[in-house]
Structure formats: structure tokens, C-alpha cells
Length: 66
Image (cartoon, rainbow, N blue to C red; front, top):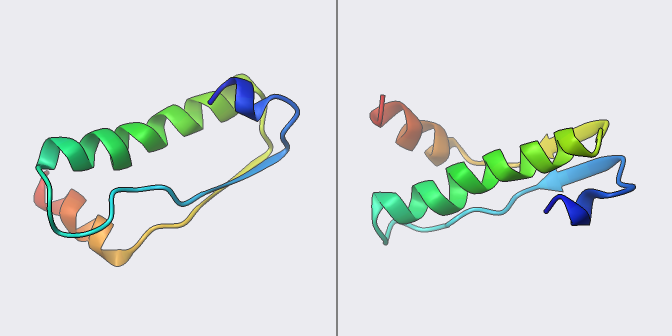
């Protein structure tokens, strides 16, 4: 991801594990940790803008976890 962000000014991030199947660990690895890695790659490359596209179900899932 760091290499992919070289020279990039703006990123639209909408990757996630979609659906109600799979383990919590899978959702965490893909959706949460994947977003964290994307943000860090953007930071390392001084990306000016990150647009995060998500869903209301992501908020609900997150709030149930703490």
C-alpha cells in the first residue's frame, strides 16, 4: 500500500469484508486492520485527502464490540 500511494494526493477507500458471514477475526483483519494500513500508507506519503466510504452496519458492528 505504501508504494501504491507514492505521488498520490487523494484516496477513496471503500474496501471491506461485506456480508454477515465469516468470523469476527476475518472482518477485523480485512475491514478494520485494512483501513488502518491504508491510513498509515497515506500518512507515509503525505496524501492530502482520504475519503472513507462505509455503511451504517459497520458502525453497529463496531459499537457492539466496545
